[in-house]
Figure: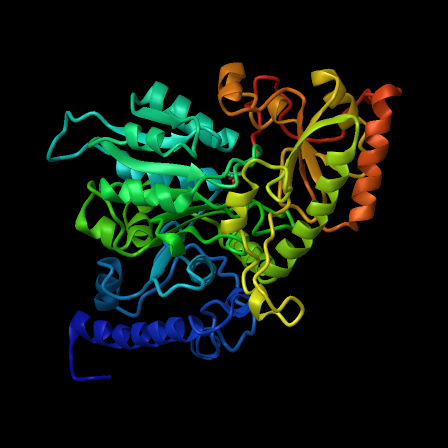
Length: 492
Ligand SMILES: *Cc1c(COP(=O)(O)O)cnc(C)c1O
Protein backbone atom coordinates (compact mmCIF):
# COMPACT_ATOMS: atom_id res chain seq x y z
CA UNK A 1 0.00 0.00 0.00
CA UNK A 2 1.17 3.55 -0.67
CA UNK A 3 2.35 5.91 2.06
CA UNK A 4 -0.98 7.70 2.34
CA UNK A 5 -2.74 7.49 5.66
CA UNK A 6 -6.23 7.35 7.15
CA UNK A 7 -9.23 7.37 4.84
CA UNK A 8 -6.96 8.28 1.93
CA UNK A 9 -5.21 4.93 1.87
CA UNK A 10 -8.50 3.17 1.27
CA UNK A 11 -9.41 5.59 -1.46
CA UNK A 12 -6.07 4.94 -3.19
CA UNK A 13 -6.64 1.19 -3.07
CA UNK A 14 -10.22 1.61 -4.28
CA UNK A 15 -9.05 3.61 -7.27
CA UNK A 16 -7.13 0.58 -8.44
CA UNK A 17 -10.19 -1.63 -8.15
CA UNK A 18 -12.31 0.91 -9.97
CA UNK A 19 -9.76 1.22 -12.78
CA UNK A 20 -9.71 -2.56 -13.13
CA UNK A 21 -13.50 -2.70 -13.25
CA UNK A 22 -13.61 0.08 -15.84
CA UNK A 23 -11.13 -1.96 -17.93
CA UNK A 24 -13.36 -5.02 -17.49
CA UNK A 25 -16.35 -2.98 -18.75
CA UNK A 26 -14.37 -1.70 -21.76
CA UNK A 27 -13.24 -5.22 -22.56
CA UNK A 28 -16.78 -6.57 -22.30
CA UNK A 29 -18.05 -3.84 -24.63
CA UNK A 30 -16.03 -5.58 -27.36
CA UNK A 31 -17.86 -8.87 -26.82
CA UNK A 32 -21.04 -10.03 -28.53
CA UNK A 33 -24.45 -10.00 -26.84
CA UNK A 34 -24.44 -13.67 -25.78
CA UNK A 35 -21.01 -13.28 -24.21
CA UNK A 36 -22.19 -10.23 -22.23
CA UNK A 37 -25.26 -12.20 -21.12
CA UNK A 38 -23.18 -15.18 -20.01
CA UNK A 39 -20.38 -13.29 -18.22
CA UNK A 40 -21.42 -9.71 -17.49
CA UNK A 41 -18.66 -8.15 -15.40
CA UNK A 42 -17.97 -11.33 -13.48
CA UNK A 43 -14.49 -11.79 -14.86
CA UNK A 44 -11.75 -14.20 -13.83
CA UNK A 45 -10.28 -11.29 -11.93
CA UNK A 46 -13.48 -10.87 -9.95
CA UNK A 47 -13.66 -14.59 -9.30
CA UNK A 48 -10.04 -15.01 -8.22
CA UNK A 49 -9.59 -11.76 -6.30
CA UNK A 50 -12.95 -11.42 -4.61
CA UNK A 51 -14.81 -14.72 -4.76
CA UNK A 52 -12.49 -17.66 -4.01
CA UNK A 53 -12.42 -18.64 -7.68
CA UNK A 54 -16.09 -19.56 -7.92
CA UNK A 55 -17.01 -19.77 -11.62
CA UNK A 56 -20.61 -18.81 -10.86
CA UNK A 57 -21.41 -15.52 -9.13
CA UNK A 58 -21.94 -16.36 -5.44
CA UNK A 59 -25.22 -15.46 -3.78
CA UNK A 60 -24.31 -13.09 -0.98
CA UNK A 61 -27.08 -13.93 1.44
CA UNK A 62 -25.86 -11.46 3.99
CA UNK A 63 -27.28 -8.28 5.38
CA UNK A 64 -24.07 -6.35 5.67
CA UNK A 65 -20.35 -5.96 5.17
CA UNK A 66 -17.71 -5.56 7.86
CA UNK A 67 -14.89 -2.99 7.66
CA UNK A 68 -11.27 -3.25 8.63
CA UNK A 69 -11.31 -0.08 10.74
CA UNK A 70 -13.05 3.25 11.20
CA UNK A 71 -11.16 4.78 8.26
CA UNK A 72 -12.48 2.18 5.85
CA UNK A 73 -15.97 2.56 7.29
CA UNK A 74 -15.86 6.32 6.87
CA UNK A 75 -14.61 6.05 3.28
CA UNK A 76 -17.30 3.48 2.47
CA UNK A 77 -20.22 5.23 4.06
CA UNK A 78 -19.38 8.52 2.39
CA UNK A 79 -19.42 6.57 -0.93
CA UNK A 80 -15.76 7.35 -1.57
CA UNK A 81 -14.84 3.74 -2.18
CA UNK A 82 -16.90 0.96 -3.78
CA UNK A 83 -18.75 -0.76 -1.00
CA UNK A 84 -21.89 -2.73 -0.56
CA UNK A 85 -22.27 -1.87 3.09
CA UNK A 86 -25.82 -3.06 3.74
CA UNK A 87 -28.03 -5.10 1.42
CA UNK A 88 -30.78 -2.49 1.30
CA UNK A 89 -28.27 -0.27 -0.48
CA UNK A 90 -26.07 -2.66 -2.43
CA UNK A 91 -24.89 -6.26 -2.52
CA UNK A 92 -22.18 -8.03 -4.55
CA UNK A 93 -24.63 -10.41 -6.24
CA UNK A 94 -26.73 -7.43 -7.29
CA UNK A 95 -23.61 -5.76 -8.62
CA UNK A 96 -23.07 -8.59 -11.08
CA UNK A 97 -26.74 -8.67 -12.06
CA UNK A 98 -26.88 -4.89 -12.52
CA UNK A 99 -23.81 -4.74 -14.70
CA UNK A 100 -25.05 -7.53 -16.94
CA UNK A 101 -28.30 -5.59 -17.38
CA UNK A 102 -26.39 -2.40 -18.23
CA UNK A 103 -24.25 -4.27 -20.77
CA UNK A 104 -27.27 -5.84 -22.47
CA UNK A 105 -29.32 -2.63 -22.66
CA UNK A 106 -26.40 -0.67 -24.14
CA UNK A 107 -25.24 -3.42 -26.47
CA UNK A 108 -24.23 -2.18 -29.90
CA UNK A 109 -23.62 1.42 -28.90
CA UNK A 110 -20.72 3.18 -27.32
CA UNK A 111 -22.62 4.59 -24.37
CA UNK A 112 -22.10 4.37 -20.67
CA UNK A 113 -24.98 3.30 -18.51
CA UNK A 114 -25.63 1.99 -15.04
CA UNK A 115 -28.40 -0.06 -13.50
CA UNK A 116 -30.15 -0.40 -10.18
CA UNK A 117 -32.01 -3.60 -9.37
CA UNK A 118 -35.39 -3.28 -7.65
CA UNK A 119 -37.76 -5.64 -5.88
CA UNK A 120 -40.20 -5.63 -8.82
CA UNK A 121 -40.95 -4.01 -12.14
CA UNK A 122 -43.49 -1.75 -10.42
CA UNK A 123 -40.83 -0.65 -7.92
CA UNK A 124 -38.54 0.17 -10.87
CA UNK A 125 -41.25 2.33 -12.46
CA UNK A 126 -42.00 3.98 -9.15
CA UNK A 127 -38.45 4.87 -8.24
CA UNK A 128 -37.48 6.01 -11.75
CA UNK A 129 -40.47 8.33 -12.08
CA UNK A 130 -40.54 9.46 -8.45
CA UNK A 131 -37.12 11.03 -8.85
CA UNK A 132 -38.60 13.48 -11.35
CA UNK A 133 -41.79 14.23 -9.47
CA UNK A 134 -40.53 15.82 -6.30
CA UNK A 135 -41.16 19.47 -5.55
CA UNK A 136 -38.75 21.80 -7.31
CA UNK A 137 -36.91 23.71 -4.55
CA UNK A 138 -36.42 26.66 -6.92
CA UNK A 139 -40.10 26.79 -7.78
CA UNK A 140 -42.07 24.95 -5.08
CA UNK A 141 -45.55 25.85 -6.30
CA UNK A 142 -44.99 24.93 -9.96
CA UNK A 143 -47.51 22.39 -11.27
CA UNK A 144 -46.07 18.99 -12.18
CA UNK A 145 -47.05 16.82 -15.07
CA UNK A 146 -45.81 13.88 -17.09
CA UNK A 147 -46.81 12.50 -20.44
CA UNK A 148 -47.37 8.77 -20.99
CA UNK A 149 -48.78 6.42 -23.59
CA UNK A 150 -52.17 5.14 -22.43
CA UNK A 151 -51.39 1.68 -23.76
CA UNK A 152 -49.33 0.51 -20.83
CA UNK A 153 -49.27 -2.45 -18.51
CA UNK A 154 -52.32 -2.41 -16.17
CA UNK A 155 -50.18 -1.93 -13.05
CA UNK A 156 -48.48 1.06 -14.62
CA UNK A 157 -51.84 2.56 -15.54
CA UNK A 158 -52.92 2.24 -11.90
CA UNK A 159 -49.68 3.66 -10.52
CA UNK A 160 -49.93 6.70 -12.79
CA UNK A 161 -53.67 7.20 -12.64
CA UNK A 162 -54.67 6.21 -9.10
CA UNK A 163 -51.48 6.80 -7.13
CA UNK A 164 -49.94 9.77 -8.93
CA UNK A 165 -52.92 11.59 -10.33
CA UNK A 166 -55.76 10.91 -7.92
CA UNK A 167 -53.82 10.58 -4.66
CA UNK A 168 -50.96 12.97 -5.28
CA UNK A 169 -52.49 15.47 -7.69
CA UNK A 170 -49.73 15.10 -10.27
CA UNK A 171 -51.09 15.57 -13.76
CA UNK A 172 -50.73 12.42 -15.85
CA UNK A 173 -51.34 13.30 -19.49
CA UNK A 174 -52.21 10.24 -21.54
CA UNK A 175 -51.18 10.08 -25.15
CA UNK A 176 -54.01 8.20 -26.84
CA UNK A 177 -52.53 7.83 -30.33
CA UNK A 178 -48.82 7.35 -29.74
CA UNK A 179 -48.03 7.65 -33.45
CA UNK A 180 -49.50 11.11 -33.63
CA UNK A 181 -46.46 13.28 -33.01
CA UNK A 182 -48.63 16.40 -32.69
CA UNK A 183 -50.32 14.81 -29.71
CA UNK A 184 -46.96 14.26 -27.98
CA UNK A 185 -45.84 17.76 -28.89
CA UNK A 186 -49.00 19.42 -27.58
CA UNK A 187 -48.95 17.57 -24.26
CA UNK A 188 -45.36 18.36 -23.31
CA UNK A 189 -44.84 21.77 -21.72
CA UNK A 190 -42.40 23.52 -19.38
CA UNK A 191 -43.80 21.66 -16.37
CA UNK A 192 -43.41 18.21 -17.93
CA UNK A 193 -40.98 16.18 -15.88
CA UNK A 194 -40.66 13.13 -18.14
CA UNK A 195 -42.16 11.27 -21.06
CA UNK A 196 -43.06 7.61 -20.59
CA UNK A 197 -43.78 4.89 -23.11
CA UNK A 198 -44.09 1.14 -23.35
CA UNK A 199 -43.34 -0.74 -26.56
CA UNK A 200 -44.48 -3.22 -27.69
CA UNK A 201 -47.22 -2.65 -25.14
CA UNK A 202 -48.73 -5.32 -22.95
CA UNK A 203 -51.20 -6.58 -24.15
CA UNK A 204 -52.21 -4.36 -27.06
CA UNK A 205 -48.95 -4.41 -29.05
CA UNK A 206 -48.95 -0.64 -29.36
CA UNK A 207 -45.75 0.55 -30.94
CA UNK A 208 -44.59 4.05 -31.75
CA UNK A 209 -41.82 5.79 -33.61
CA UNK A 210 -39.45 6.02 -30.69
CA UNK A 211 -36.76 8.06 -32.41
CA UNK A 212 -39.27 10.79 -33.25
CA UNK A 213 -40.65 10.88 -29.71
CA UNK A 214 -37.13 11.15 -28.29
CA UNK A 215 -36.40 14.03 -30.65
CA UNK A 216 -39.52 15.93 -29.57
CA UNK A 217 -38.95 15.34 -25.84
CA UNK A 218 -35.26 16.20 -25.95
CA UNK A 219 -35.89 19.39 -27.92
CA UNK A 220 -37.87 20.49 -24.83
CA UNK A 221 -35.32 19.21 -22.32
CA UNK A 222 -37.54 16.35 -21.17
CA UNK A 223 -36.16 12.85 -20.49
CA UNK A 224 -37.63 9.73 -22.10
CA UNK A 225 -38.37 6.61 -20.04
CA UNK A 226 -39.20 3.39 -21.89
CA UNK A 227 -40.59 0.16 -20.47
CA UNK A 228 -38.71 -2.44 -22.52
CA UNK A 229 -40.13 -5.48 -20.72
CA UNK A 230 -41.92 -7.19 -23.58
CA UNK A 231 -39.26 -6.93 -26.29
CA UNK A 232 -36.25 -7.23 -23.99
CA UNK A 233 -32.77 -6.11 -25.05
CA UNK A 234 -32.63 -9.13 -27.37
CA UNK A 235 -35.01 -7.25 -29.70
CA UNK A 236 -34.89 -3.56 -28.77
CA UNK A 237 -32.46 -1.34 -26.89
CA UNK A 238 -34.03 2.10 -26.40
CA UNK A 239 -30.91 3.56 -24.74
CA UNK A 240 -28.95 2.98 -27.94
CA UNK A 241 -31.58 5.02 -29.81
CA UNK A 242 -31.26 7.95 -27.45
CA UNK A 243 -33.74 7.18 -24.66
CA UNK A 244 -32.54 8.22 -21.21
CA UNK A 245 -33.93 5.50 -18.98
CA UNK A 246 -35.16 1.95 -19.49
CA UNK A 247 -37.48 0.03 -17.17
CA UNK A 248 -37.41 -3.74 -16.98
CA UNK A 249 -39.84 -6.00 -15.26
CA UNK A 250 -37.07 -8.59 -15.13
CA UNK A 251 -39.77 -10.93 -13.88
CA UNK A 252 -40.98 -11.35 -17.47
CA UNK A 253 -39.10 -11.92 -20.73
CA UNK A 254 -35.67 -11.73 -19.12
CA UNK A 255 -36.35 -14.57 -16.70
CA UNK A 256 -38.52 -17.16 -18.38
CA UNK A 257 -38.25 -19.75 -15.59
CA UNK A 258 -40.75 -17.89 -13.44
CA UNK A 259 -39.10 -18.31 -10.05
CA UNK A 260 -39.53 -14.81 -8.69
CA UNK A 261 -40.19 -11.11 -9.05
CA UNK A 262 -37.46 -8.70 -10.08
CA UNK A 263 -37.10 -5.25 -11.63
CA UNK A 264 -34.42 -2.91 -12.93
CA UNK A 265 -33.85 0.70 -13.93
CA UNK A 266 -31.11 1.16 -16.50
CA UNK A 267 -30.04 4.70 -17.32
CA UNK A 268 -27.47 6.30 -19.53
CA UNK A 269 -25.02 8.67 -17.91
CA UNK A 270 -25.80 12.39 -18.30
CA UNK A 271 -29.50 12.16 -19.00
CA UNK A 272 -31.41 15.05 -20.55
CA UNK A 273 -33.60 16.77 -17.96
CA UNK A 274 -34.70 20.29 -17.13
CA UNK A 275 -35.35 19.08 -13.62
CA UNK A 276 -33.13 17.51 -10.95
CA UNK A 277 -29.71 17.93 -9.39
CA UNK A 278 -26.45 17.58 -11.31
CA UNK A 279 -25.74 14.40 -9.38
CA UNK A 280 -29.06 12.91 -10.41
CA UNK A 281 -28.51 13.72 -14.07
CA UNK A 282 -24.88 12.58 -14.20
CA UNK A 283 -25.53 8.98 -13.14
CA UNK A 284 -29.25 8.45 -12.63
CA UNK A 285 -29.28 4.76 -11.65
CA UNK A 286 -26.45 5.18 -9.13
CA UNK A 287 -28.23 8.22 -7.75
CA UNK A 288 -31.38 6.12 -7.22
CA UNK A 289 -29.35 3.40 -5.54
CA UNK A 290 -27.36 5.68 -3.27
CA UNK A 291 -30.06 8.15 -2.23
CA UNK A 292 -33.81 7.55 -2.73
CA UNK A 293 -33.71 3.75 -2.77
CA UNK A 294 -31.51 3.75 0.31
CA UNK A 295 -34.19 5.77 2.06
CA UNK A 296 -37.25 4.13 0.53
CA UNK A 297 -36.01 0.55 0.50
CA UNK A 298 -37.33 -1.08 -2.70
CA UNK A 299 -34.17 -3.15 -3.08
CA UNK A 300 -33.85 -6.52 -4.76
CA UNK A 301 -32.95 -9.65 -2.83
CA UNK A 302 -29.66 -11.34 -3.77
CA UNK A 303 -31.46 -14.63 -4.32
CA UNK A 304 -33.79 -13.12 -6.92
CA UNK A 305 -30.90 -11.26 -8.52
CA UNK A 306 -29.05 -14.54 -8.96
CA UNK A 307 -32.07 -16.40 -10.32
CA UNK A 308 -32.57 -13.60 -12.83
CA UNK A 309 -28.92 -13.51 -13.81
CA UNK A 310 -28.94 -17.25 -14.45
CA UNK A 311 -32.00 -17.01 -16.68
CA UNK A 312 -30.68 -14.02 -18.62
CA UNK A 313 -27.63 -15.86 -19.91
CA UNK A 314 -29.65 -17.58 -22.65
CA UNK A 315 -31.93 -14.61 -23.41
CA UNK A 316 -31.15 -14.22 -27.10
CA UNK A 317 -31.75 -17.81 -28.13
CA UNK A 318 -34.89 -18.04 -26.00
CA UNK A 319 -36.39 -14.88 -27.47
CA UNK A 320 -35.58 -16.21 -30.92
CA UNK A 321 -37.27 -19.53 -30.24
CA UNK A 322 -40.34 -18.01 -28.56
CA UNK A 323 -40.70 -15.47 -31.38
CA UNK A 324 -40.54 -18.09 -34.11
CA UNK A 325 -43.21 -20.17 -32.38
CA UNK A 326 -45.38 -17.11 -31.80
CA UNK A 327 -45.26 -16.28 -35.51
CA UNK A 328 -46.67 -19.73 -36.30
CA UNK A 329 -49.33 -19.44 -33.63
CA UNK A 330 -50.35 -15.97 -34.85
CA UNK A 331 -50.65 -17.25 -38.43
CA UNK A 332 -52.84 -20.13 -37.23
CA UNK A 333 -55.13 -17.81 -35.27
CA UNK A 334 -55.38 -15.28 -38.08
CA UNK A 335 -56.85 -17.94 -40.37
CA UNK A 336 -59.28 -19.34 -37.82
CA UNK A 337 -62.97 -18.54 -38.43
CA UNK A 338 -63.69 -18.05 -34.70
CA UNK A 339 -61.02 -15.36 -34.33
CA UNK A 340 -62.01 -11.78 -35.14
CA UNK A 341 -58.63 -10.17 -34.87
CA UNK A 342 -55.05 -11.05 -33.98
CA UNK A 343 -52.74 -8.47 -32.47
CA UNK A 344 -49.19 -9.43 -33.33
CA UNK A 345 -46.63 -7.04 -34.73
CA UNK A 346 -45.06 -9.85 -36.72
CA UNK A 347 -48.18 -10.24 -38.89
CA UNK A 348 -48.04 -8.35 -42.17
CA UNK A 349 -51.67 -7.43 -41.64
CA UNK A 350 -50.90 -5.52 -38.41
CA UNK A 351 -51.23 -1.79 -38.96
CA UNK A 352 -47.91 -1.16 -37.20
CA UNK A 353 -45.99 -4.01 -38.85
CA UNK A 354 -43.86 -1.76 -41.06
CA UNK A 355 -42.88 0.46 -38.16
CA UNK A 356 -42.11 -2.49 -35.88
CA UNK A 357 -40.03 -4.03 -38.66
CA UNK A 358 -37.78 -0.98 -38.56
CA UNK A 359 -37.13 -1.39 -34.84
CA UNK A 360 -37.36 -5.05 -33.81
CA UNK A 361 -34.40 -7.20 -34.80
CA UNK A 362 -32.93 -10.26 -33.23
CA UNK A 363 -29.70 -8.94 -31.79
CA UNK A 364 -26.56 -10.27 -33.50
CA UNK A 365 -28.50 -12.28 -36.09
CA UNK A 366 -26.08 -10.83 -38.65
CA UNK A 367 -23.23 -12.45 -36.70
CA UNK A 368 -25.02 -15.74 -36.27
CA UNK A 369 -23.70 -18.59 -38.42
CA UNK A 370 -27.25 -19.83 -38.91
CA UNK A 371 -28.87 -16.55 -40.04
CA UNK A 372 -25.93 -14.54 -41.37
CA UNK A 373 -28.05 -11.39 -41.80
CA UNK A 374 -30.14 -8.95 -39.83
CA UNK A 375 -33.53 -10.54 -39.24
CA UNK A 376 -36.73 -9.37 -37.59
CA UNK A 377 -38.27 -11.03 -34.58
CA UNK A 378 -41.40 -9.80 -32.82
CA UNK A 379 -41.43 -11.50 -29.44
CA UNK A 380 -43.63 -13.97 -27.60
CA UNK A 381 -46.67 -11.86 -26.77
CA UNK A 382 -49.81 -11.70 -28.86
CA UNK A 383 -53.46 -10.99 -28.33
CA UNK A 384 -56.55 -12.17 -30.13
CA UNK A 385 -60.22 -11.34 -30.03
CA UNK A 386 -62.58 -14.29 -29.99
CA UNK A 387 -65.90 -14.31 -31.85
CA UNK A 388 -68.96 -14.47 -29.64
CA UNK A 389 -67.95 -11.57 -27.39
CA UNK A 390 -66.89 -11.90 -23.78
CA UNK A 391 -68.77 -15.19 -23.37
CA UNK A 392 -67.05 -16.73 -26.39
CA UNK A 393 -63.64 -15.63 -25.16
CA UNK A 394 -64.25 -17.07 -21.70
CA UNK A 395 -65.41 -20.40 -23.10
CA UNK A 396 -62.37 -20.70 -25.29
CA UNK A 397 -60.13 -19.66 -22.41
CA UNK A 398 -61.71 -22.25 -20.13
CA UNK A 399 -61.17 -24.91 -22.77
CA UNK A 400 -57.39 -24.62 -22.82
CA UNK A 401 -55.78 -27.82 -21.55
CA UNK A 402 -52.05 -27.16 -21.77
CA UNK A 403 -51.80 -23.37 -21.88
CA UNK A 404 -51.96 -22.13 -18.29
CA UNK A 405 -54.57 -19.59 -17.26
CA UNK A 406 -52.38 -17.14 -15.38
CA UNK A 407 -51.66 -13.43 -15.14
CA UNK A 408 -48.09 -13.83 -16.19
CA UNK A 409 -45.98 -13.51 -19.28
CA UNK A 410 -42.61 -14.41 -20.72
CA UNK A 411 -42.65 -17.90 -19.26
CA UNK A 412 -41.00 -21.04 -20.59
CA UNK A 413 -44.55 -22.43 -20.30
CA UNK A 414 -47.25 -20.88 -22.47
CA UNK A 415 -49.68 -18.76 -20.44
CA UNK A 416 -52.83 -16.89 -21.33
CA UNK A 417 -55.08 -14.40 -19.63
CA UNK A 418 -58.16 -12.28 -20.31
CA UNK A 419 -56.81 -8.76 -19.65
CA UNK A 420 -60.25 -7.22 -19.01
CA UNK A 421 -60.83 -9.46 -15.96
CA UNK A 422 -57.23 -9.64 -14.77
CA UNK A 423 -54.29 -7.40 -15.63
CA UNK A 424 -56.45 -4.52 -16.77
CA UNK A 425 -59.52 -4.99 -14.56
CA UNK A 426 -58.71 -2.18 -12.15
CA UNK A 427 -58.53 0.56 -14.73
CA UNK A 428 -62.24 0.21 -15.50
CA UNK A 429 -64.21 0.21 -18.73
CA UNK A 430 -63.25 3.75 -19.77
CA UNK A 431 -59.54 3.13 -19.22
CA UNK A 432 -59.74 -0.11 -21.16
CA UNK A 433 -61.60 1.55 -23.99
CA UNK A 434 -58.94 4.25 -24.23
CA UNK A 435 -56.26 1.56 -24.37
CA UNK A 436 -58.29 -0.63 -26.80
CA UNK A 437 -58.67 -3.68 -24.56
CA UNK A 438 -62.07 -5.28 -25.25
CA UNK A 439 -63.66 -7.97 -23.06
CA UNK A 440 -63.20 -10.67 -25.71
CA UNK A 441 -59.44 -10.17 -25.94
CA UNK A 442 -57.19 -13.02 -24.83
CA UNK A 443 -53.51 -12.38 -24.25
CA UNK A 444 -51.29 -15.31 -25.05
CA UNK A 445 -47.63 -15.66 -24.35
CA UNK A 446 -46.06 -18.51 -26.23
CA UNK A 447 -43.39 -20.47 -24.35
CA UNK A 448 -40.88 -23.15 -25.12
CA UNK A 449 -43.24 -26.03 -26.00
CA UNK A 450 -43.24 -27.26 -29.58
CA UNK A 451 -45.50 -24.82 -31.48
CA UNK A 452 -47.54 -27.71 -32.92
CA UNK A 453 -48.69 -28.56 -29.42
CA UNK A 454 -49.58 -24.95 -28.59
CA UNK A 455 -51.60 -24.75 -31.81
CA UNK A 456 -53.27 -28.09 -31.07
CA UNK A 457 -54.38 -26.82 -27.67
CA UNK A 458 -55.72 -23.57 -29.13
CA UNK A 459 -57.52 -25.50 -31.85
CA UNK A 460 -59.35 -27.78 -29.45
CA UNK A 461 -60.14 -24.84 -27.14
CA UNK A 462 -61.70 -22.97 -30.07
CA UNK A 463 -63.73 -26.09 -30.89
CA UNK A 464 -64.91 -26.23 -27.28
CA UNK A 465 -66.63 -22.83 -27.62
CA UNK A 466 -69.68 -24.73 -28.89
CA UNK A 467 -69.28 -27.56 -26.36
CA UNK A 468 -69.48 -28.02 -22.60
CA UNK A 469 -67.34 -26.36 -19.92
CA UNK A 470 -64.53 -28.67 -18.95
CA UNK A 471 -63.72 -27.82 -15.32
CA UNK A 472 -65.73 -28.53 -12.20
CA UNK A 473 -65.18 -26.14 -9.31
CA UNK A 474 -63.66 -28.24 -6.51
CA UNK A 475 -65.28 -28.18 -3.08
CA UNK A 476 -61.96 -27.37 -1.46
CA UNK A 477 -59.24 -25.16 -2.85
CA UNK A 478 -55.73 -26.49 -2.70
CA UNK A 479 -53.78 -23.34 -2.06
CA UNK A 480 -52.77 -21.92 1.27
CA UNK A 481 -52.41 -18.33 2.38
CA UNK A 482 -54.83 -15.48 2.30
CA UNK A 483 -58.14 -16.08 0.63
CA UNK A 484 -59.80 -12.95 1.91
CA UNK A 485 -62.03 -11.59 -0.82
CA UNK A 486 -60.90 -8.06 0.02
CA UNK A 487 -57.33 -8.96 -0.94
CA UNK A 488 -55.97 -6.78 -3.72
CA UNK A 489 -56.26 -8.31 -7.13
CA UNK A 490 -53.03 -9.41 -8.70
CA UNK A 491 -51.90 -7.64 -11.82
CA UNK A 492 -49.39 -9.00 -14.22
C1 LIG B 1 -45.38 -7.14 -15.40
C2 LIG B 1 -45.03 -5.86 -16.00
C3 LIG B 1 -44.60 -4.79 -15.19
C4 LIG B 1 -44.53 -4.90 -13.68
O1 LIG B 1 -43.53 -5.77 -13.29
P1 LIG B 1 -43.55 -6.62 -11.90
O2 LIG B 1 -42.22 -7.28 -11.92
O3 LIG B 1 -44.69 -7.56 -12.00
O4 LIG B 1 -43.72 -5.64 -10.81
C5 LIG B 1 -44.25 -3.61 -15.81
N1 LIG B 1 -44.32 -3.48 -17.15
C6 LIG B 1 -44.73 -4.48 -17.96
C7 LIG B 1 -44.77 -4.26 -19.42
C8 LIG B 1 -45.10 -5.71 -17.41
O5 LIG B 1 -45.52 -6.68 -18.22
